[in-house]
Amino acid sequence: MSASVKKRLLDALEVALRDDPALENVQVERDRALEAQAFPCVLLHSPEVRVDNNFSVYEAMHLMEVHVEGYCTATPGVALSDALDGLQTKVLSVLQRDHTLGGLATDVQVVSVEEEIDKGGDSMPLGAFLIVLEVLFFTDSADVTTAV
Picture 1: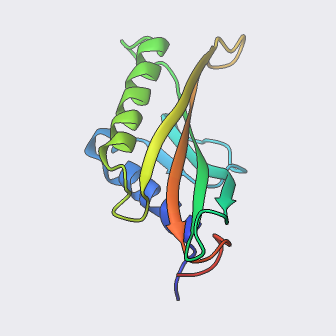
Picture 2 (picture 1 turned 120 degrees about the vertical axis):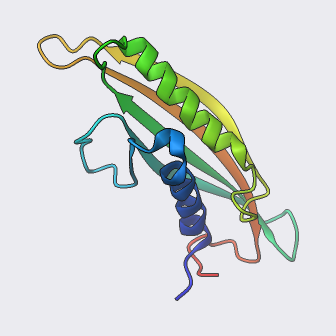
């Protein structure tokens, strides 16, 4: 059974993150409803796909927004800010390695990067970042849930 374009693009991003040796101890998850149980971890999801039906009569241009959220804690001998910067750098390196996701997309661009450190009060301090990507791709259907 074929998968939708949106699912195939997210699968390609997930595989790239899971298979990179620099991220071998990082939990990669697609279900935002699950709380991170292990740190460091990366959550991957797509809240929006926009389509331009006027681009061509033969194909539709899609722009999919993908959020890559990363979470980490301090480890012995490594400050929280250094752990967060290290994880973010590794994730960005993986995301920028293949701008076509194995030929599925025309381009993948980083739109923004935000980070935050929560001192945690009585709980464990936590570092977090959000990388927003735009994935440009074309299909012959305006519906990205259509199987291909």
